[in-house]
Length: 316
Image 1 (cartoon, rainbow, N blue to C red):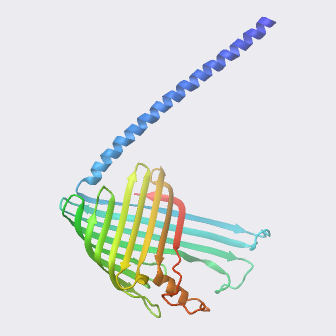
Image 2 (image 1 turned 120 degrees about the vertical axis):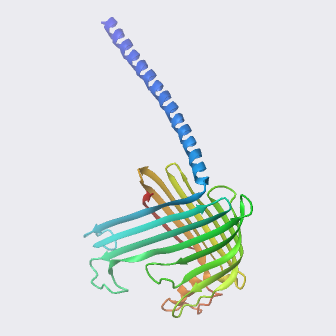
Image 3 (image 1 turned 90 degrees about the horizontal axis):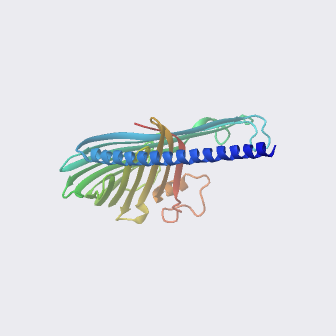
């Protein structure tokens, strides 16, 4: 009987040792394959960088679609037990760049739109400030940029820039911002563009009682757009420094990330920051009742504006 027991123990131990050896061998093989994949991806990225540096048109786009819907009935633990709610967000980043030996022409567009709805089924008042069963605009950003430069060296160029910013869903061109200027563009590495235009005029368009001022100043733009394997990335900082009054200055910083999971579909995340005292002042004037003391451009708090969007992404 003892011989049988010892024999079984040895057999079980032998099987476990064999399985352990097999698992370690498989892990070793898997690590080697991953190293090979990383090496291949590195070579592919190097070739892609060479392709990106070739003269000619480079066109591409990627974006994010985020959203959710929900419905509650008799959910008494929350403040609005009967409601339908939803959010929809869309971000698109596109570019069309012409690269030549002596000059370049870079064009880009950014659009970020979002809608939100909270319909209280127990509230029959569908007119503001009551309940609203329709989607309402929540985020509204639209920017067009065109940069032309004549190369002095491989990294420096004299350039002219046109940049237009406004909203699309409501108050189109109210306000609208158009920057036109000349100066220097620095491109130290592929995909990074730094624009410094000491001579720039910031045109501000508005209607009605809005109080906006155009002014002369300097324009500074930094943009980095790149695709690394399954990752698309774009960050853009655009700033205007007014020579006439610092309260006319403004800046906007937007960022977009997307990671491709399957074919052209993946997950994306966008966020943006902005400071614009003229916008803060005009928003304060629209409040009812007016804050005390009466808002002026000088006494208005220039609070940081921000947005973010998370959802599915699509690239092409």
